[in-house]
Length: 262
Image (cartoon, rainbow, N blue to C red; front, side, top):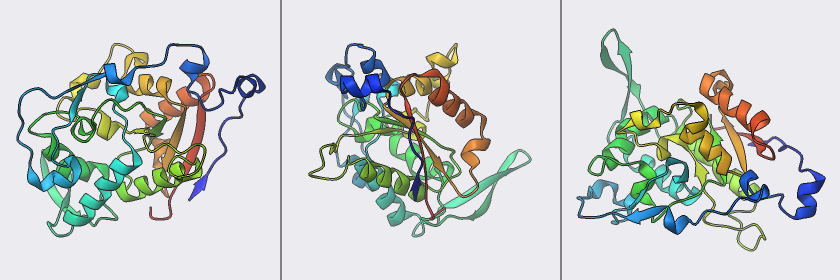
């Protein structure tokens, strides 16, 4: 795996000791109080035991702002373990559209399962009873993004998570004893942050009002996760995320990671 250099830190930022703070905090904005941004789930909900390795027998919470539904590397590792446990055993299949119908294309393996398949086989089924975003099912409260992930859904999930785990290790977030160690570090990933049962809620009057843009504004940096074909840079929405990261938000870091598993 490799890491591109991030945007240089200005001398002023270094002097202020704010090199690792998100742009809004560098500008002096009031920090978020995450405890005020979520609430416990009211009432009862039937949790499907097949997903217990994900929800841990807890109902999750309600996180009203989509931009605060980032996911931690530990929560992503649970996703990988779930895929490895069920994918081949249950013969998860990829589908393609032929005319007006969806037909079986090929069998997924844990190493080839992408987010299109993950959404069909476990994200939507796991959240069906609550009709919520995946992060609301597995988190205990709002999770502010430290980094924003720009990627495309066709990349294998396990390769994506490997990139994130290496990124967290390289920055010391997952390295106990390191001054930057922070197990709560979270990454904003649209598939887990957006409510897949209500994609109309993603729409906004302007691009600046979308959850994508708002998450970028909250983050310390953006990281493009690349497969071997660099498809991330061929997608319009990913190109927009790169444009915003590099030109529209002052002080935002930008990095690229890839994985030989792709």
